[in-house]
Amino acid sequence: MQITVTTRDGGTHPVEARAGLSLMQNIRNAGVDELEAICGGSLSCATCHVYVDSLPPGTELAPKSPDEEDLLDACDDLAENSRLSCQLVFGPALDGMRVTIAPEY
Image (cartoon, rainbow, N blue to C red; front, side):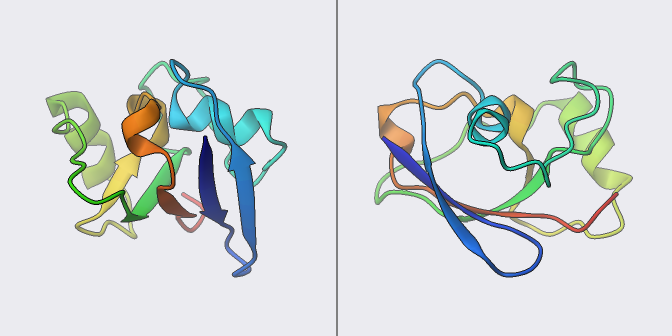
């Protein structure tokens, strides 16, 4: 399974992804250090902010929790497709998704 990650410089990186891990963990495990994820996925920062560019046809993400909404609202570069990658659990339905790492928080 794979995720395509676009970094801030516009480079694209195919990331082999494992089901059951968060999107953040998969990206960090692949060595994409640009995704800081300072809190390690404990939902206490927004340094794993990404833009979900595309999903496989017929796939929808789980809705944002109130805590995720609050953290995203504090981001300067909030967009409609903004998500915290620590809150998205990767699975087969997301195979092929594309994300862009948001500007530094």
